[in-house]
Length: 208
Image (cartoon, rainbow, N blue to C red; front, side):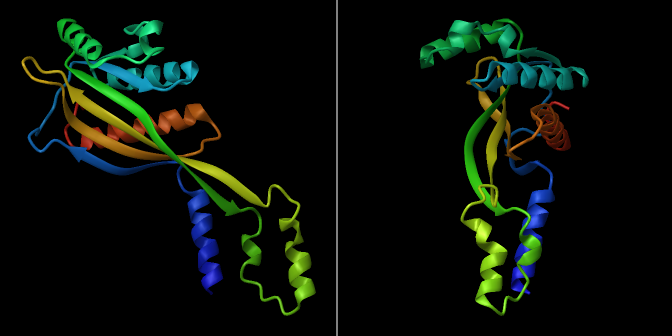
C-alpha cells in the first residue's frame, strides 16, 4: 500500500503543471500600486530567451494599458556584458526616472534543483516478488538502461516589481517566487510563467 501511494504521488508530480507559484510578498505600506511606464528586465545569458521573455511580458503589460519597454531596447550590449558598480546602477536609475519610468519588473533565475524519478516502472512498485530470480529479472535493466531513471530540473525564479519614486530609493513593491519544471517547450513555459505572475499581481492590486 505504501509503495502504491509513493507511486501515485510521483505520477501526480510528473503530471502537474510545469509552472507553479510557490510564494508572494507585497509591501505592507502599499495598498494599490499603479504603474504607467514599466521597464521589463529578464536576466539571462541566453539572448534569444531574453528577447522572447521580455517581448511577451511587455506585450502582456501593454494589453492591460501599461506602457512597457524591454531592457534590450534600453541597455546596450556592453552594459550587460560586464559587472557594473553601484554608482553605475544609480546613474541608470536616474536615467529611468528622467525618461518617465515609474517601475521596474525584474525577473531572474535564483537556483535550480535536480530530481530523479522512475520511468515506466511505477506500475511494478506494488508487486510482491516471491522469488529472487523473478525480482532480479524484472529489474535487471537498472544496471544497464540509462533511461531507467529520468533526471529533470526544477528552476526557481523570482519576479520583483520595484517602484521608481521621486525623492526615494527604488523600493520593492511586490515579489513572486515561481518553480518551473524543466520545460519541453520554452515558449509555452514563458507564456505560463507570465500568465501566472500577471494574474497574481492583479489579485493584490499591483499594476493591473
